[in-house]
Length: 185
Ligand code: HEM
Ligand code: HEM
Picture 1 (cartoon, rainbow, N blue to C red):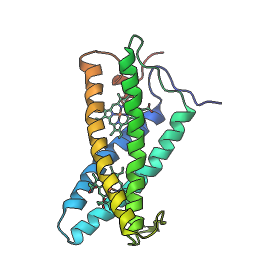
Picture 2: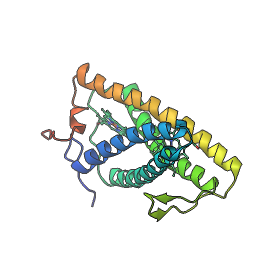
Picture 3: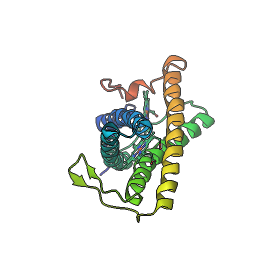
C-alpha cells in the first residue's frame, strides 16, 4: 500500500525531513566554507570533524527522504501553473536532490582518497569508498566545490520561487510546506 499524503498539503514526515535537511544543508555550506578557509590549527581540524560528521548524517537523511518521497504521493502543483513553471519546478527539485546526494558522496570520496582515517563524531570509523590516490582526491574535491556552488545557486532560485509564490502569486505553495499549517482537502 502507498503511504498517503493529505492533499494538497505535504504530509508531516515530508515537511519534517524538508526543514531538518534544509537546516543541516545551510549549516554544512557554512561549516564547509569555514573549515576549508580556516588557518591550519586545532580549530580547523575540529571544524572538519563536525563538517564531515554532519555531512554523513545529511546523506542518511536524504536517502530516507527520497525513499519516503517515492513511497508517498506529492501534492499536485497548483492548477493553471504554466508548463514552463512546472518544468522549472521539477528540474530544480531533481537537481536539488542530485546536489544533496552528490555533496556528501564527493566529500566522502575526498576523505577516503586522501587516506586519512576518519571517525564520524569521533566514534564510528568511516569506511573507505575510494583508493588512496591524490588525483582522485583532487578531482572529487573540485566536484565538491563546484557542486556546492551549484547547490548555493539553486537554493537562491528555490527560496526566490517560494517567496514569489507566496507574495506575488499568493498561492498555497509555501504555506503547504510550513510546519504547523494543515490545508483542507
Ligand atoms: C528558506 C529555505 C527554503 C524554503 C522557503 C523552501 C520552500 C519549499 C517549498 C514551499 C517547497 C514545496 C514546493 C511544492 O509544494 O511543490 C519545497 C520543496 C522542496 N525543497 Fe525547499 N525550501 C527551502 C530550503 C530548501 C533546502 C535547503 C533544500 C535542499 C537543499 C530544499 C529542497 C527542496 C526539494 C528537493 C523540494 C521538492 C520536494 C519533493 O518534491 O520531494 N529546500 N521547498
Ligand atoms: C550536505 C553535505 C555537504 C555540503 C553541503 C558540503 C559543503 C562544503 C563546502 C561549501 C565546502 C567548502 C568549499 C570547498 O572547498 O569545496 C566543503 C569542503 C569540504 N568538505 Fe564538504 N560538504 C558536505 C559534506 C561533506 C562530507 C560528508 C565530507 C566528508 C566525509 C566532506 C568533506 C569536505 C572536505 C574534505 C572539504 C575541504 C575541501 C576539499 O578538499 O574539497 N563534506 N564542503
